[in-house]
Amino acid sequence: MTAEVNIDLKDYSYSVIVGNKNLDRIGEIINKTLPDTVRTFVISDTNVFSIYGDRVINNLKKAQLKPTYELFPAGEENKNLLTARKFYDKLVEHQMDRSSLIISLGGGVVGDLAGFVAATFMRGVKFAQLPTTLLAQVDSSVGGKVAVNHEKGKNLIGTFYQPDFVLTDVSTLNTLEKNEIISGMAEVIKHGMILDKDYFNYIDNNISEILDLTPTSLIQLVKKSCQLKGSVVKKDEKENDYRKILNFGHTIGHALEVITKYKKYKHGEAVSIGMVYNCKLAYKMGLIDYDVIDRLITLLSYVGLPTEIPKNIGADQILEAIKKDKKSYQNKVPMILPTAIGKVEISNQWSEEDLKSIIK
Image (cartoon, rainbow, N blue to C red):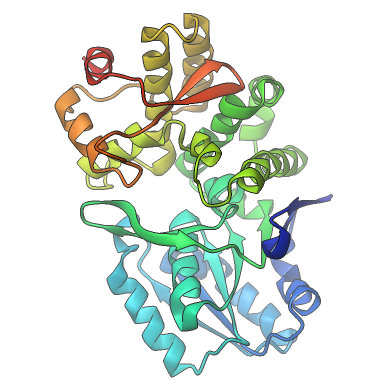
């Protein structure tokens, strides 16, 4: 079973090809989609490449795509300008040019970094994503956000750069640690919370099968999440307004990541907590009934995601980190607040006092 989702962005449209054992099709897809490609350059981290690197490189060789590769140590803390510079040096060393294709093999960190390098090397070269984590497959590989972190905040240095295609292989999820699957489920649940009540109900009703990594359920899950995110990106590619709804849970989540120096929480875990507190803020403001919070917490808890800010992190720390968020405008960050399951609004009307009270 294979599914294909078209991300419709006019001149920058591309396909997300979702299936089982898709890594073995990479050479075929490149020759079909980007027939003028001469060389390929795979960017991956040490963990992912040790599992899938030989398989991908050998497939590229068979397709006569002259592959080379470079790695960086796994971890969010290595997604920075220093690492990017090392890749620029290697791209020059390997004589890559605008006929070359940069391929990201890995999760969201690898995709963000490789995409940033592709967007900025020679003012932009061809780029493809091979996402290997659930988080990357359902979210970060789609939409064109690429960035590196700064010590003062996550993804502060970046741009929008759409890939030429995304090739998703759900079988890669079988080699992930359970906490990586759990982390990715936060973004899946987010899509249901902000865009589609029926999708939220589907996740809720099929959660055991999803967590068992049944291929058909995973393909359906990834396909639907990509369709939903694609519909948002189509309306607002550069996040001028509507696309901000995808930040549901992320403002508080990013604050937690910054406060804990990216060492305590996986991204999805931080987003999970952020979603709950966005719902609590919406309830405090009279936008939702408590049953919305209850359903969300019940599902997140069943999956194994955290739902509370630790007691050793204070409200003032959260607010200080929020004000440094890259989405801040005139010292105010818009919050994405639910009005029902499947519906949200972008609000600047929240107060610091209300946020402090729900954290306390």
